[in-house]
View 1 (tube, rainbow, N blue to C red):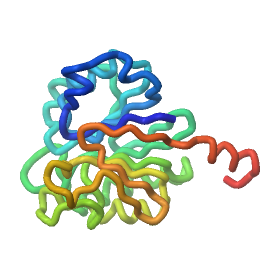
View 2 (view 1 turned 60 degrees about the vertical axis):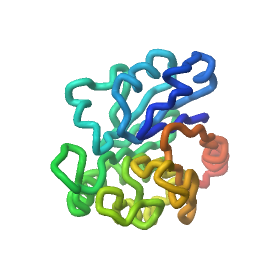
View 3 (view 1 turned 135 degrees about the horizontal axis):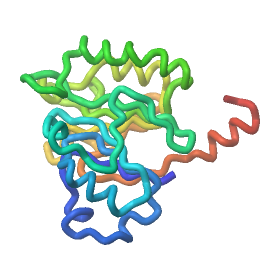
View 4 (view 1 turned 180 degrees about the horizontal axis):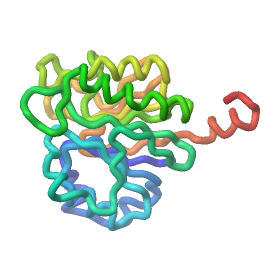
Length: 210
């Protein structure tokens, strides 16, 4: 499964210089937040792939201009072709805003998801706006990551963790790719395409190794 992850800055390659062929072969588009809702609607118009999104800390405007043809996965587990995707948008609270949370508030959101996580047997991709604490985050409060995300990674060991919020243009300390235990971490800033290998999971099911 080929996935296009996007966040924080609208890609001129995809918007200003768009050609439909650039989305050929893309099976899923995932936004990690802080993007113009009209940009997401634009992409949804030119692809049959689902466009999923979580909110970034600057996405209060989504209340007035929702991304048409797109699916919000905040606080839910969305399943696409057997791949379980958990969405938790927003950043650390540093001023008033609909999509800013304290660590305690984010933990409360996660607690509400325990029944769904149990029913689904975990998740394969974690999609957030903010990074996890001490993993590609900033030390200033606005860009600090959440500790509860680390607990989710420790407990469920998903294949991928997608986030935005810390722009790679901030400096070379913010990497595109990282790894935490069994989880591949991707900073989705602007755009990044990666392959999610579903064949390995299919082999496990055949062999009874779920």
